[in-house]
Amino acid sequence: MRTRHLTRWTKQILLAALLLTNVQTFAWQEGSKSIALARQYMQNKEYDKALPVFKEIYDQAPFDKAIYDEYLDAIMLAGQYSYAEELVTYMSKIRRDDPAMLVDMGKVFEAAGKKKAAREQYDMAIAKISGEDFRTRLLADAFSKINNTDYAIKAYERARVMVQNPYLYATELALLYGKTGNTEQAVNAMLDVVLTQPNTMDDIKSSLLQIIDTDDKKKSITQKQISKRIALQLDNPYWVELLTWMYVQNGDYEGGYQQTVALDKKLKEEGERVVSFSKTAAKDGQYAIALKGYKYVMDKGSSAPMYEQAWDGKIEVMLRQLEEKRPVDPEMLAALLKEYKTFLNDYPQYNISSLLKSYAMV
Image (cartoon, one colour):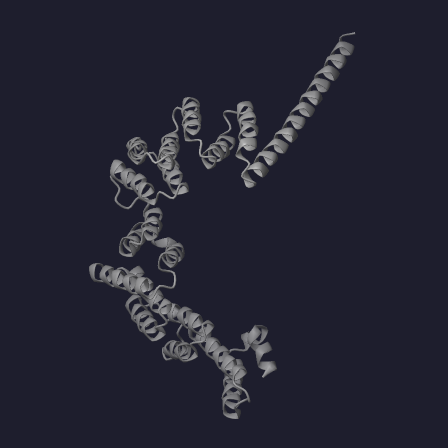
């Protein structure tokens, strides 16, 4: 008897859960339809039709920040700033610990032409930064979303002061400084990352590229700032690596080669860095520089650890030169075949590499 009761109760619970799921699914589907309709009205600039639909959606989910954001944007596009103030005030009571609400209110004031009131809201938001990473990023992102780069910078700079770390948020600040057009400050902030996170050199280079883009003036500024860092820290190899990279960005492969060789000698790397640089030069079509680099490594002697790689690289460059020259130069072909035969004779283990395949194509 007891088992029957349990079975019956189990069925009733499952049925109730199924009904609840169906109701929630239906509500979600209806909500999606309403949002799509409201967005369509906004796209058609039919604000008088869109806002009531958004209000109905928001009233059903006042804790949903995404819906709130979209609703607020819709109200502001409609130019109903008093209504927008009311919405932000209401949401601020729900999200009492969210300083981004102050940014929202400032955004409304600014759109309504109340510049002073807007700045007061922004300043209050900045004042709430205590150094906590989550809150700092939250506010900086909120300012960035409304294209207020100056206050996004203030958010990160205040956090630096609060935790007494002058290198904190260096990458974020570098990119923001770059947006304001202050290239020197942007580059210096990015170079500060080298001092704290030198193992992220690839990311540093990528961020610097975002800052300087293809602007020759910005490239010149960057190269000068790196040179200044070298003067201050002569024993830091990362500065020379960056300077070499900048030479390449400027198309000065000879300068990059000289820096690479100097660093190789200083760190006694036995040519590893030079081989890497030569590969980059070859990839960029700078064959003369690439061959120069490989020769430097090969001149260290056959016992040098990078000798085989340098010879392999040299042959690859010679093959590229031959392939790009039409009609085929008999002397270049003869020189290449000689290099192949000598290399494969001295290093038969390369017979299983791609080198033999390329030899067969010559």
